[in-house]
Amino acid sequence: MPVTHDVLPRCNLAVFAYSGQVTYAEVAEAVRAVANHRDHTPSMNQLCDLSAVTGIERNFTALLQLQARIAESLLPTYGDRLVVFYAPTPIARAIAETARKSWDGLGSVLVRVLEREEDALALLGLPHRHISDLTRLGT
Image 1: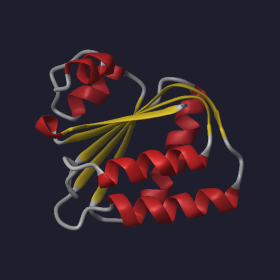
Image 2: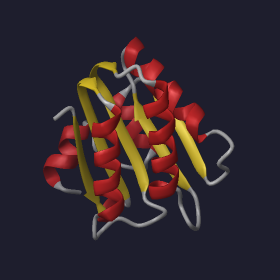
Image 3: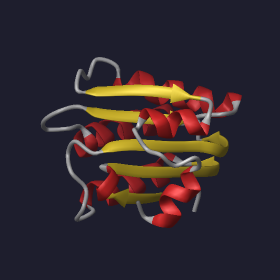
Image 4: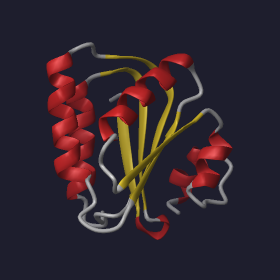
């Protein structure tokens, strides 16, 4: 599956990792699973690892439907949410910028797109050097 996810309550973080050719249906399923996870909270930050993505489905209707589902499922009901995209490649940055634009106008969500893994983790206040360390350790 090109989308995996993990909820790390001790870090107040939901991690999404994308790989290969990603479809909107797979993204929607991961968003639904995180939103329904017993440890997920409405103000939990998100880290989206796009480092292994090679492409994304080209379906404007599906994109609009996905954006609506994300807003319903993951928009904070209180406080702010930081969404960080680790996007080291041109295709990853293009996907992250499209996602960032979908959050525009939602004052409670701050989106950042970063090219360096260490920078993405540091912005989230995490001492880890690699995303794989974060998810492997469960912290």
